[in-house]
Image (cartoon, rainbow, N blue to C red):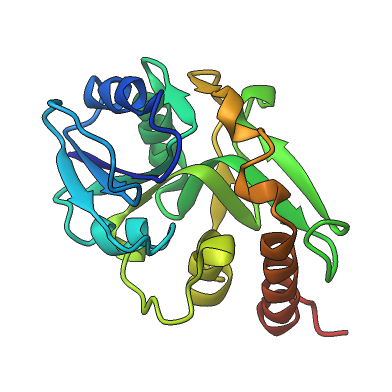
Length: 215
């Protein structure tokens, strides 16, 4: 059984299509709605948050799901038929870990200067990474952790760098997804300068603590 948890706060025009696409290939879909504005008749579990508690809500709601495997997804990615099968195929090879559509390998103390990226659509084989994101797939073994201090700019790094640094991460080769235009528009979190500073500081702290090789 596969559960999907999506977090949304502003990309409401395309959200119905994203939810419907996930419903076609998952057993259950949960929506973490931080907008307090979205309405749907789709057969999902609609969890509203007011005030907006940010992206960390998906980690909390993931614990309410029933699936053996759980996908945590951004609302700006449209899954295509076969995406969950691609994740399951990769899991049968790795047998453990956190899988994703985007990955980064760490080479130094700066997130924006000392990491290199991997994209699922550019790969032909599974690739190890130090961090994966955008859409992630894992078993229930790696869902539970304390959310204190987990803010929106670093919630994915918090999960993987602070809570589960030793767990292997993999980028899955697949073209069965589409990044929507809102993924890179000026309002996305990636271009928010305050969020970038928070992310850079968190990365440096936990890179030095959990990833830097002892010389």
